[in-house]
Length: 232
Image (tube, rainbow, N blue to C red; front, side):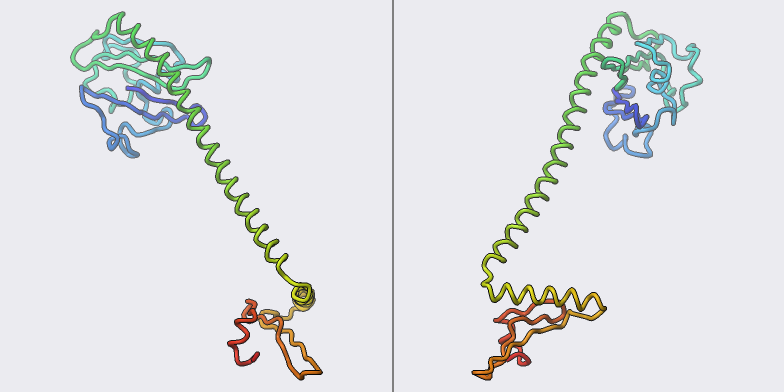
C-alpha cells in the first residue's frame, strides 16, 4: 500500500492498495469504503499507528504476537500474518506511508525487503512532494488566469464605453449629461425615472423632436423612436 498524509487536515489518502494479491480499485476507495480517505485515528490501521508513533521503518514478523495488535481496527487485521511499513519523509515533514503486508505466513520479509522499502519510501517521498508542488502551482496559475481574464474583460468594457463616448457629438453628449443630472435629482426625491423623455421644440419649423427617451429603464434611440407612434 501507499498513502499520503496531509498533516494540516490530518487526512490519510490511500492511492495504491493491494490486499491478498488483489488491487483495490478506485471504486472501492470511495467515501464509505474501508480504504476511502479518512481522518487520522478514525479507523486505526497500520498507517495511523506509524504516523502516531512517529517511528521509522517497522517490521512485524508475527502480527498475532505483536504488542499493538489490538490497537489496529478489526477491518485491517483480517488474515494478516506480518507486515512492514516505512514513513515517507521530506526533511522533518511526514508526507505519507508505504508498506507491505503478508497473508500467507509469518516472517515473509527479510533484510533485502527492508532495504528495498527504505529506498522506495525515500524515492516516493520526492515524487509525492514534486506532485504536490506541481498541483499547487497549477491551481495558482488557474487562479491567476481567471483573475487575468476578469481584468481583461473589465478593460474591454472600459474601452468599449470610451469608444462609445468618443463617437458622441457635442449635442448628444450634452443631452446625455442633462439626463444624468436630472435622473440623479429626481431619484434623490423618490421620483421614478424609468419612463422619461426630453422633447425639443423648434419654433421656426414648429417641429417637436425627442432626442432622449427612456421606457421601462431602457433608452430608445432614434431608430426605435421612429417606430413608436407616441414620439412620431
